[in-house]
Image (cartoon, rainbow, N blue to C red):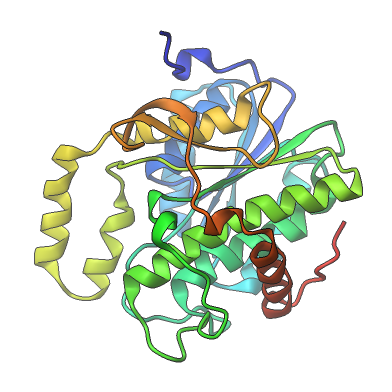
Length: 309
């Protein structure tokens, strides 16, 4: 049976895409592939120097492509708002694809610029606010897609509304898994609201399985545990390359008959590797009451309107 791969990417000429965290790992592969396929591609990156290097790399690998760089720090809501304004200008007011990819994992307790726990604030609230600010651009030229990157870890995550901001204790892995569950609940609620408003938006999610990226390096480094970072590098023997981990994301971004709310991941070995296929969501990820409550609380925390449609 044929397994979908990069050779199956459609021609994306005339479309515009934004990829967060496009300077490394899955985000870099996603941005490059979209650019090679003809999309005007905006790399939204926190670190300007690394973002500039990524932009140069895409332009070298995809000569003639229309690629742009926009600074975006998802851990700072003012930066998120500024980035959305820049994106509106770079895309001429039309956005066909938003890939909410950037993220952090297993950090020691840190706070965003707005005082949120770093993992929930970056992985969920930052992308929630960015998507909200970009809603006026989505669906203006036909069907648009929002693809949000989650994780296998969502399956043991739970939303603790009494401790979203880690004010009553903190566990780095529990916080990470909560943020990844939040990504899936956001995906589902975004689709529900788009459908109710009659907006031509597909909200989808994907996860990369076990992929060797820099995501697992930041936590040990920030905690000063060089041994843990070395151990993380050793585990790369058992993981797949970012080019493989990006396949479910690109699949969700371009599959012609994708249904809103769908979730994709690798199809082999418990969704840890292989070509893309429909992925399994936890029971908690399907709880629409929690999804609605999380949307309302996220809007309150980020200061945006919960009724953006």
